[in-house]
Length: 369
Image (cartoon, rainbow, N blue to C red; front, top):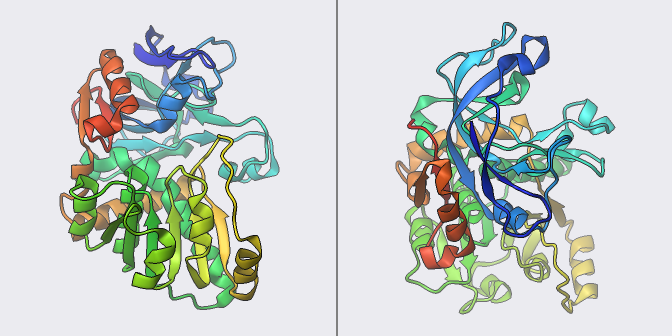
């Protein structure tokens, strides 16, 4: 079968490889699920791995098959699989258990291991292939009604995890009734975050760099969010316009904005960070003021990365709810469909020039839904 792979730590090494088709028997105890890939998303993580910023090949291989955003159809199951059946649409999770205590209790997204196992990222081949086989424990069944937008489930799962953490933390208050939210960053993650907040009833204010007219801003306003360019309205100044925020979700990839966000948070508010920033950027901050605000105002800051099975299942519910509330909105995010894995060069050209292409979500269509 065909697959799209890189040689980790080698710049611009993305290429097509031929591999053996996996078998249900590759998974022990009759728990194997063989899946035909329908769609596989491409994102900044794939671009960064191809730029040799990180990525680790599985044992026994000098290459790593990319892809962690996936949608497939079950073609065969092992004798002990009951969760899914042949013909079902499925999405598989990304991280697999390692050796830490947290891994042993099914919380591998909280692993304390230095070495971790993630499909298409670290030590496990990903989903940019024609088929994959997986243990049924990590396979999520997708209702046919949302199959067309289910390629968005993996990035949404990380948002779901962040929101669940916020509510779990605020159990300390017995009752937490957040009303207003800000989303910093309006790419794929920012758009999905705004959607997840709107279906929960939040008043949502979003901020990006681009001035209007801007397609992402139009999408946000379509579901009842406000949009402001940070060139015209800084996060700090936005508080004068909208008030302090009960919840802020940061997804910009620009670390200095975190310290501005900390100063925009309401009392008992939660700031969720989702950007992974690997640079050497530095900034000057009013540390005494921020410290005092967090101590006296019972404010919280928490990070979210990767996600577990429960967060994927939460995402399935929110995709369905979004379709009921904002029918057709999510499909507008699927801006660039590229047919066939052999056209990987086009996909990476779009990833490297997303602003030129006005791309939100680019994905391979490997087989028809």
